[in-house]
Image (cartoon, rainbow, N blue to C red; front, side, top):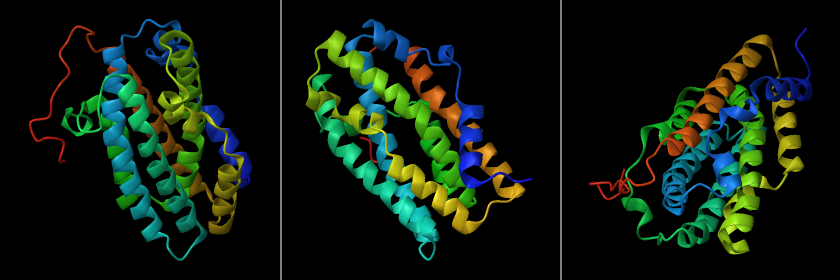
Length: 232
């Protein structure tokens, strides 16, 4: 029997939640041992990710303009706009100006997540994408909460510098309720549930790849510069 949308979301979240040891960067930030240049690279990669994800959500919203999913994806795009505005405070605390962010080269492991989301925007089944995204948000939010606490405790970052992580760490029960309503309105069957599980597994894998790619960077290495000046 196909579970209810709420039960399906809870099951997917429990199934996809990574082990505590899977993320190799957040524990270093929590200990205060991640160097500031590494934190700056996180900002630069997020700059690219947020801009890409906002476009992907807008594409999904346009695809679903005549259904409840359209409003859901539109709100996610609005959230990315708010996050982008907050990112500048974090980047500045790491020594990067807004003008410098586009010039940092993309790291393949960090950009796998937005590339997968862009694929979903064009090819994914929208209801399954809602399930996958809602399930993934919990892990991302937990990482952001831990990072925000550590930035204040170990790095002396201000509230303005932590606002980007605070934004994603703040629970949004109304958004989850909307996801449940969207899935219920579209109808949940075994095919959509299987697709949601597949999408969610990939998104969660790429989420971890983002953090662990940064964890594997040499702190002594010069930050990469994009020869295309970040126009891609």
